[in-house]
Amino acid sequence: MGTSGERSSRLTGRLRAIALTLLVVQVAALGIAVPAVEGRQRIRSAGMEIWRYAAYPRVGPTDRGTNVLILQHLLRAGSPKLDLSSTYDRSTRLAIAQAQKKAGMRVTGRADGRLWDRLAVPLRRGESGHAVRALQVALGEKLGWGVKVTGTFDKRTFSALRRLQRDVGLRWTGRVDDRTWRVLAWHYERPAFGRSSLCDYSTVNGPEANWATSSVIAWLERAAAIFHRRTGLSVAVGDLSRRFGGRIPGHGTHGRGMEADLRPIRADGRQCSVGGNDWRERGYDRRNTRLLVRALRTAARNRVLFIAFNDPGLRSGKGRARFAPGHNDHLHITWCIPGHRSSLYRCAR
Image 1 (tube, rainbow, N blue to C red):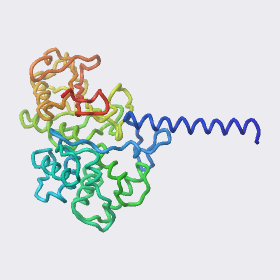
Image 2 (cartoon, rainbow, N blue to C red; image 1 turned 90 degrees about the vertical axis):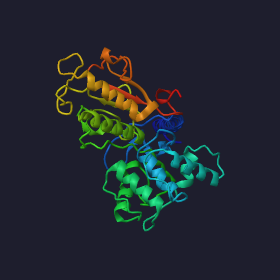
Image 3 (cartoon, rainbow, N blue to C red; image 1 turned 120 degrees about the vertical axis):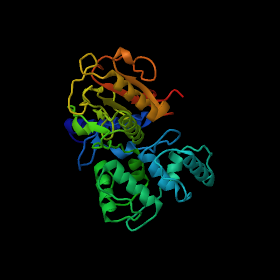
Image 4 (cartoon, rainbow, N blue to C red; image 1 turned 135 degrees about the vertical axis):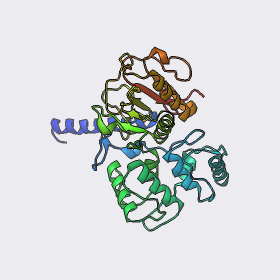
C-alpha cells in the first residue's frame, strides 16, 4: 500500500494532473492567449504545447496581409486565375464561394476553419504546387527565415518547417499536417521595419514585443505607407504583442496581437530616434499626428476599434482619439475583427 508520504505524493500528482486538464479545457474554450518564450526550445506554458491553441483565422471583407495571401495560394488549385493581391477582394470572395460550393458547404464568400481544413492539404518534401507556395509564404513572411516561394518543397523549406515544429512542440517530422497548417495560419508576424515609412523604437520589452496578427501588421504597414506618401515622415512603432500573445510587462492589454503603441509625430520628424515626445511639450506636431490617425483609420476602414491619445485637439473629426490615463506620450491603437472570440476585440458591425 505504501507509506502515508507515498500516498500523499500520488494524490498530489493526481490533483495536479486534474488541474492541468481543467486548465487546458478552460483555456481552449475561452481562446485565451498563452505567454510565449522565444528560442529553439519548445515553447510551453504550464506544460502545454502552443499548437493546442492554434486555430484557423476567419478571412472576410477588409482583411489583408499574409494570411489572405496564404489562402489565395491555396485557392489557386481550384481558381488558377485568382489574383495574389494579399487583399480580400472580389476575386477572392468568388474563389472562396466556388470552393465552398464544391465542398458542399454553405456559400458565404468568407473563409472559416472548415474551408481551411479542405484547402490545407498534407505536404511532404519533394512535392510541388500551389499548397507548397502557400507553405513557403507562411514560413518566409511570418518567420523571416529566408524561405523563397518556388513552389517546390525543397531542403530550405524542410529545414524551416522542422525548426517551427520544434519551436511549438510538434513532432519534428518536416511534413505538413493539419496541426502544422493551423499553427502557420495562426502564427503572428513582425512589421517590415527598415522601410522609410516604418521604424521600431525600443521599450523594456524589446523585439519580443514586436509581434501581431497578420491583418494588424498589414493594416499598420499600409497606414505607414499612406502617411509617408503624404508627409515624407516615418511611423515609430513600440510594443505590439508577444510571438504567441499572452501577458506582456507594463501593459494590461496587448495580449492578443490586436494592438500597437506608436509615438506621436515630432515637428523635427525625429520620432524614430528621439523619445519622450509628450503632446504637451514643444516639438509636438499636432497636424501630422492627426494625419497619422487618419491614415490608420483609412488603412483599416472600420476595423480600428479605438485610438487612445490624450491630445484634446484630436478628440473630434477624422483624426479623433479618446482620452486614456498614461497616454500623453504615445498613441495606443486597438483593431477589431467581426466575430472575434473576445468581446474586447470584436467589431460592433
